[in-house]
Length: 378
Ligand code: SF4
Image 1: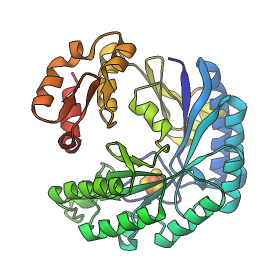
Image 2: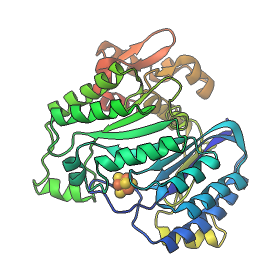
Image 3: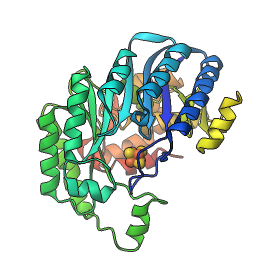
């Protein structure tokens, strides 16, 4: 399969949220300019390195791509168009944070073909936003939302988190209602994970971070599912909800285990059965790329067995699951011949539903998805 998707990592944020272990840094405008110099060179090399089709999906993620000012945003979009042909109808998504967009930036994005925005809202409760170390408040969400709509963005995702310190079911309910009232075309909703190396990790180990108990977190997930389904969203992935016609095409490339190129510091690409990882350190990334080198620090051949496992683990995130036909097309063998015993075991446990077309998580399986995924790893 020829690659037709591109991920672009922009590793800058206005400050560091307390729970965040993403590859993102607080930096100066001067460093951002130098980063764009490097990104330009890397895009040129990556476009030449792979036998790609005109792009069908592009995702600018971070970090916060909207940390760039309008001039830098224009450079970022121009380099995409200069180095890669784009298919008509290409999906170009840009991650943003409330409070980091203005009319100039948004119109630059729109004029250069961006057609999907994703805002890291996380909650509508100001006290919870403060606890997370987020810089925005509820009013900033509404202001940024208005600006995005005025700029003509009619496909907007809002990220939502639950299982937050001190969050009650009532607080989540208020956030769900506020979010549904706004009416985004897409919602991604994740429970908080305490990751090593973050302030939350330290506070959690010291007993200073009190999280909702596990049963309450499960209840919260059920509330999220019921809330969005009840409001007419399709739950098409275990954490993602979309109005008709607004599924994230780029993320479906990942979940279907299809190839994608990636550029930017710390970015991971997967092309031709090879996974590569870029230099994470921003100064080193800039130094390598401006001198005309690829910043790849790690490459891994994904052998056939690992590819089959990935197809199952990633594909089962989708509510449609993995079809037998797609598995055979992709891997040249029947899914039952490779994973027959696992399918049978989890079908008996009521966590997988297997029919003539393929396999998918049951409603019960959605809540125990990690146990199911683990079984596919050799
Ligand atoms: S805005 Fe996102 S990427 Fe940036 S620090 Fe916060 S969680 Fe991390």
